[in-house]
Image 1 (cartoon, rainbow over the protein chains, first blue to last red):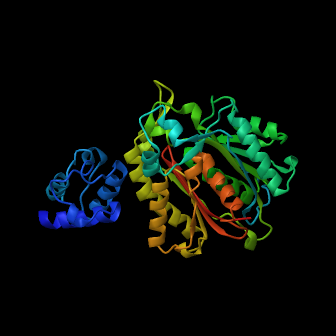
Image 2: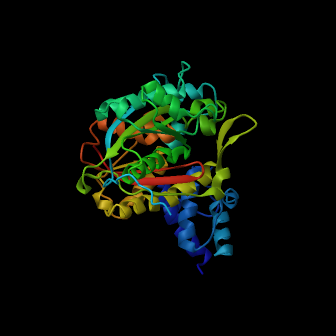
Image 3: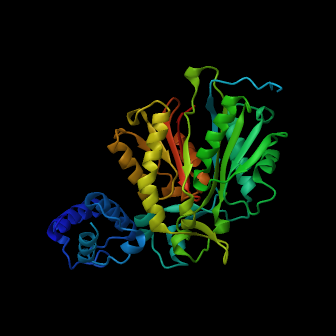
Length: 80
Length: 328
């Protein structure tokens, strides 16, 4: 089981690969859409990679609920 | 029991000719931005399209299909009388009856061929090529005209920015015939299938007769499930990813095209594999997108005779099909 800190680090690496955003900018309070300017298709790519990395399922309806990086970290922590 | 006499089989099929057509009417992203809340940059970022061709003069779907078919026939050097089977892959016929294949054949001057429509949506051309190759190998057909033709503009809500920016019109066609020997077989085995559980992700809404798709679900499916289909087609043909010179996936969305190509390269496809990007100027033309892209790549020199080309179609159904071909 990954800790919240490990999840954040892993998620930031995925966000960097998919959207080219520096890992340092990927912090829990950031909104994917409003702060990081990530669109809905990139969110799918991030979800697919997070599923592989953390062994979780992130269906599309759940994905829509993950507004901030912190939401995603919490969801992964709860469901891994 | 009576033993039936069956036709002589052939070693397999090969491509003999290719042709395509598009409407003259160009619709740019800026044109669309005048009537809906979108912009050139937004569209380029989401789907990679800069402009698309949309019928503006009332041209019929079967007229486009016949034009593409005639060009493919001319390219093959065959006469209309030598075609015995016409497969018309389309999901946008204005009405289910009559079918498009017979009337298209008649417009071309092909007399009394076996003619049927095939609806596998955006996978239709690869389904058609797979079906044609099987008919030719079994001896049930000799020369088959496979046409992918779509008039998606008839089935679009032109106020819905999620679909109006993507879909377009056009037609492409190929003539297939028997290879004289095993070494000259030019169509590999088809890798195909469907995912009917995801049927509700792309459908025609009855209330407005317009296409609707769950963009995120379809994107997830296409970017995770289609590269394995492409790899399966390569494996079935007895090849490896490094053998592929040109990759022509259905032109659904440039980001899907790039995601699948990236996965193929991670599996051993070459960096210099040429990847179709015809969607940029043609939009998503469903079953027509693969032959259109191939024909355009031939015109600009990115595909040449003897190239090993990987085709893979995927879309509503959901359905998918891929095969490796040798470019004629």
